[in-house]
Image 1 (cartoon, rainbow, N blue to C red):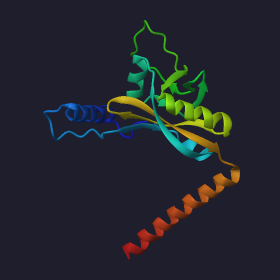
Image 2 (cartoon, one colour; image 1 turned 90 degrees about the horizontal axis):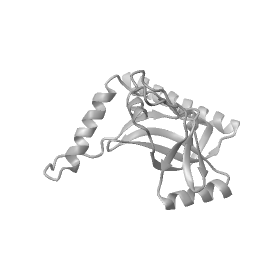
Image 3 (spheres, rainbow, N blue to C red; image 1 turned 60 degrees about the horizontal axis):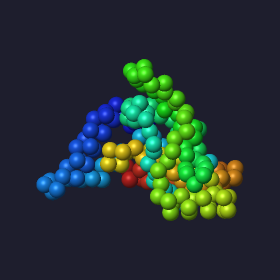
Image 4 (cartoon, one colour; image 1 turned 180 degrees about the vertical axis):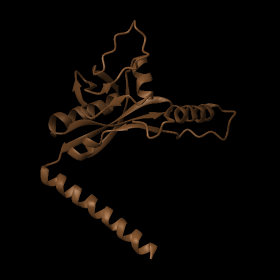
Length: 184
């Protein structure tokens, strides 16, 4: 989801900065204007992420517009490898009500991920042999294109989840104590 209501404006600012960076006549351009669209916090809770990859997505026009509007959900999504190709299943993109009527949108269709052949071979080896799984981590813009971060992950046991939560709470408590001691 977009962090504030000016997501479209932020996207346009990033586009302008990226266009300036691609223009050789402009020396003051910055091309590191990436913007997160949505994060899959459930995946970070349920899995320990070993390695991260960035993949492009094959999207239709109405999907790109809906994603820019923040109407996407990754929580139920997962990634599979089939016939030496990588697919994202279960990502829900809610169509905009203003979508054209000549296209019948399917909100949970299977979407192909675009990765380099070497990365796909590495993923196949780890997923099939080592017992790893692939999970979508976040959806973001990079140079105006929608990208998906996927993680090579192993499932956490229940006691691992509890330990992670305990550590997180202890860090919060430490920060709270530091703030109170600094105020006095």
